[in-house]
Amino acid sequence: MYFFLLNLSFLDLGAISTTVPKSMDNSLRDTRDISYAGCILQFFFFTFLITAEYFLLTTMSYDRYVAICRPLHYETLLGSRVSVHLAAAVWACGFLYGLLHTANTFSLPLCQGNAVDQFFCEIPPILKLSCSTSYVRELWLLMVGVCLYFVCFMFMVVSYVQIFRAVLRIPSQQGRHKAFATCLPHLAVVSLFVTTGFFAYLKPSSMSSPSLDLVVSVVYSVVPPAVNPLIYSLRNQALKAALSK
Image (tube, rainbow, N blue to C red):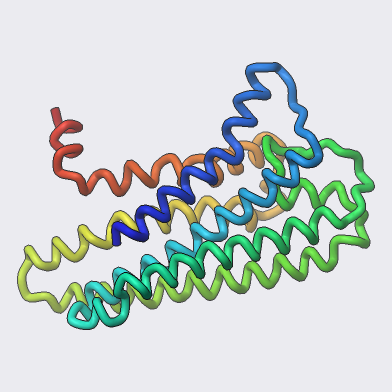
């Protein structure tokens, strides 16, 4: 679990470092500019890191499933070598997905100016700048991504259904509490990540406005990476004692 948490911390640090420093720099210099190359890099790293984080959270749900439902087979199913391979696959899939989106999006002709209606470069505001007939292939790629995200989401749901069924069969209350305490931080992180991301990309167009889109983008791009360390740190007894004092 802590090996996957190490990877999650690197992804969180990378995701929040992709958007916040540039935004703070623009605020301090009272400007809203970003170079074309800077926009491409910001777009790529944000898409890469957020996608890899979602895949990692899916992998962590499998880790919790094996630890609780099949504890005697844990070393066989999720030994150190398997964990390294899973983490490498997560980073590689996120990198490939970010690369495909970046290459496809920035190959589109931008016919609507160069003002990105957002505080960082991401897919929806850049697609708004492209010609109306040229972004069909990017929409197809987005649909593939949505299907992939949905499969991962269903995998997490099935994993937690099995986990809760196994936990409820534990005879001792202390054992059930320990199992729930192991799962709740991950479940809280997944819920925060999924709900903010789904609302940002799947909210009705009638609810869309520049101010609301900005707030939603800040919430899903900044809040989860900032809150994740706090959620997992609440399991640390020393930190709990310090907070209670």
